[in-house]
Length: 274
Image 1 (tube, rainbow, N blue to C red):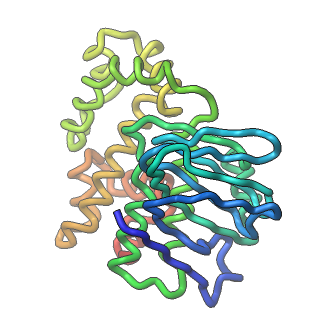
Image 2 (cartoon, rainbow, N blue to C red; image 1 turned 90 degrees about the horizontal axis):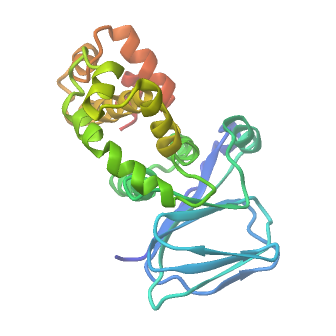
């Protein structure tokens, strides 16, 4: 893995409620000491290896599938605990960042953990890949992706230990496979989910909430929207209605509303951004 760093300074950043300042990968993270902090919000996560992150007298271990979100000017130090510590990061700011984080309930100056299967793990890598393909000199696309990334952290990452989640994943793994195979079927719902695992709807709802912070059906809808995003980019010959039908939506208006609620854009707007 090679060192990569993108510095994004949008000319119209004052018009953007949130904008990325930099994003990158460091294949050989070294000791960093910032007694006065960093002037922007800073997200750092581990891809491989392990490191220590120190601030306010607390020391956090950042291993795979963990990260930390710092507010501007928060003094901190971090250093590797293994011979090789691979990290990725994004720094960002904007007039509305503080209000946005408060609104979605995302805390700063805390350490997060998530499951390996979580989309948090690869989201920055996907963003870097998009930036490599499309020069985004104004940071407009990156701003949209950054907003989505913060929502993903809020939905999938947790502040506490995740030892119980692995057990839950094992229990519901057959259902996750079932959902992925039934994305295009509009008839599938909670009853079929419960029958597959021989659980009551209430039990199933509790496990999904505990594991993903979503209800089973909301998780299924997110899978459908994820597939829709792929189709919108890879199958541009398909109309919005056809894409909706292929991911299990009978109504085009329902598909558009669900897509906008999760992605923050309509399907057509999302397709035009790429």
